[in-house]
Image (tube, rainbow over all chains, first blue to last red; front, side, top):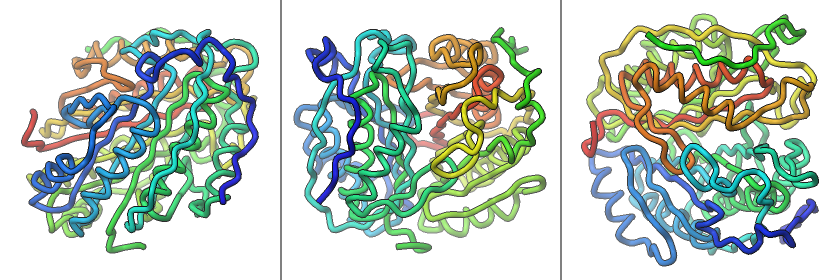
Length: 216
Length: 216
């Protein structure tokens, strides 16, 4: 049972009418497999993962995954789990963002307001993961009452991770999470979504380790 | 020749008297080598890299590197270059932070002010790298005149990357950099340091790809 922390929720705002692509909801993911067969393993993981509802763009360093939060969380969990099932040591870097679509300039400047989303549930994968997680409420000049309060927002996210058992420790610059891969990814996404209920532009970075010989 | 963008510089502040550890200057690095021999290659890279002046703490997911900016940049460049010289495809995730020492709570709350640092120069490695880079000026309730302006700060950092030739493109959520590994790391660090002259708490995330068969 997970307690949902209390944060101001500005759902009844104009931003609530935006679609996820209009609001710039998405993630970037980089998957590393410590094997000479990494290309085959990553391609097989991609082929086995359902991209329904998502826009995928593969780049030199990472793959962009755009769409609604539940689809993003499901896709990332399935993709990284598939690579983890190879049995090799896998490292994955995930970068979530919402509230700032566009390239250099946000096409939704600060006044658009936050967008309410529900926290998605994801079935367990059976794969243990360790994660290091950072969460960033960003100030782009929002409306009064929707501006970030970094510590308030971080505490709410850590409360969530503590309630579901994935919180391990606070380290320099990051929170360490451990648990089923689905829980770790869902927890990072939950913090991002919770803070996004009161702050328009929120990003979150999660580095994951699976099958490490030195831990878990 | 690199043009240094013009940003407000609050060097003459009390924060200018803090040491790098007191100010929480550091990075976390995760190194992934796509080979069954990854442990040997990473251990050899660590052994060949001079840690002088730095505090290193190796964790499950990443290694913390604390110290002054020039030492951090030199260490990360030498470490990742050593792994890259294995010839294997290498992925590295780097997370810079300054202005928020401590665990969950910044031990320097927002009023401490920014800390001026010089941009370090690093010799070329001869290794090509592609990077995806995000830069976050964070609002922890700073003094007037030292608060973040996300777009002003990002533009200054991109101006720097354009001037030294490493800027390739703006992608969703990130700036793509390419060039010698030293230049790519130095450019990300330069943006972090430049923004840090007017904003106390600044983080930056850089994902690097070396020896990728699909690019470079």
